[in-house]
Length: 290
Image 1 (cartoon, one colour):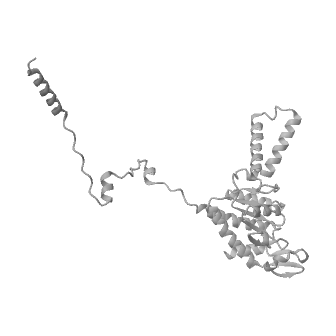
Image 2 (cartoon, rainbow, N blue to C red):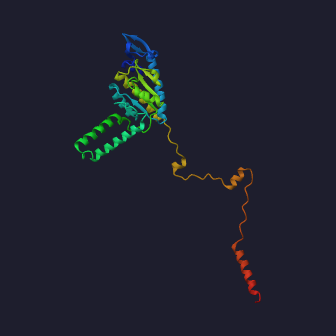
Image 3 (cartoon, rainbow, N blue to C red):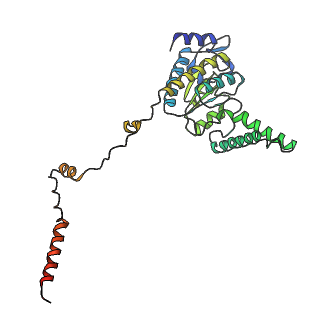
C-alpha cells in the first residue's frame, strides 16, 4: 500500500478508538496502547485488514457477484452512496429492514410494489384518486423508495457485504452469518470482531476516515470488475461463417479402425440394356405362329 494512503489515514484519525471504559476485550489484539483514557488502534493491523479486504473484494467482483454497501449512521451515508454508485453496487444507507437478506423474496415484492406505484404516478392514475387515497399511496411510495431504493437493481443475494460500524449494523451482520455471506467491516474498539470475517480496525465515527476506507474498497471492486473474463466467441461465429460438420465419413471411420475403406458396390445395369432385353422378348413373341 502506498505510504501516502497510510499518512492520509493517520491524518484523518483512524487510530483513535473509544474511551477505555467502552471497549470490547476481544479487540485487544488490535489496540496499540491507551492515552488520556482513549484507546489507540494499531495502524499496522488496520492496514493489514485493508489489504486483505481489497484482495478479497477484487476476487468477488471478478467473479461477477455483487457487493452490498451498508452504512446507516449519519457520517457514513454520503460516502457510502457516492462510492457504491461509482462502482455500480447496491447500498443501504437509511435503515436496515429485518429480512433484507434472509427474506429476500419479500423484499423483491416490495420493490415490485414500488414500480407499480411509480407507474400509477406517471400515468396520472394516482391523482385521479381521492385526496386521502392519493396521500396514502404517495406516503407508501416515499417510504419504500427511502428504504429500498439503493437495492433496486440487486436481483440476487450479494457475494459480500461492506459494513461501517458492525456494532450498529448488528442485524446485517447476523443475517449475513446465517446465509454464510462474507462480511468486511470497519469496526471500532467497542465492536466484536468474532462476528466479522475480515475486520478493518479503525475509527468508524470520523467522516473522513469512512470516506478513505470506502474509496479504497470501491477501487478494489472496480479493479475486480475490470479483470472479469470476456465471453469466448468462436472465429466462425465472429466472421459469420457456417461451422463445418464434425460427422466422420465411412472411409475415415474405416481408416481410424485400422482397416481399408470398403469398396463401393457396383452400380446397377443401365436402363438401356433392360429396354433392349424387353424389346428382344417382344420380338420373339411376335415371330411365334399363332
